[in-house]
Length: 148
Image (cartoon, rainbow, N blue to C red; front, side, top):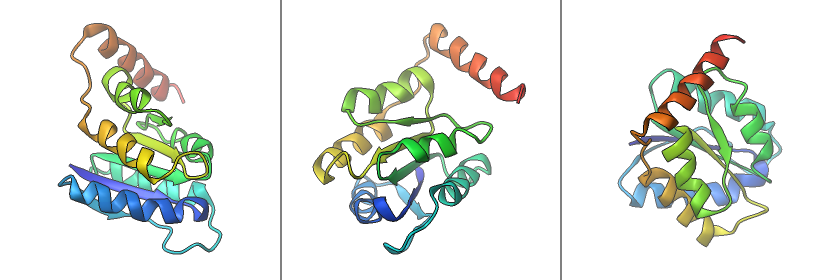
């Protein structure tokens, strides 16, 4: 898979660990910044991450900020993006399986490197369920996008 990964300054150091892990899992990585620990606004990074997905340059995205919350809010402002904050392995895979999440957000001030690797592995291994209940619900989310 092609994975776009972005962070603000609070997530910069954990992002490096995540990039190494995603690459070791055999995925192609596009680093959307930030490229150092200097302050940067997470909405700007979210625009780059989500644009890569919407334009078909990436299959899924990962964002790392302090809590994951700001990144998720920013990403969810973009039509066609379904972002979720995931700090446990169950949510990391179920967000894809049930809700077809295409951007997972992680809080670098909440999780450490070991858990982040487990979260990323679960997220990237998950596939959207073929169960009609989940498909119907995601179609309704797409309809909500169209009403914006």
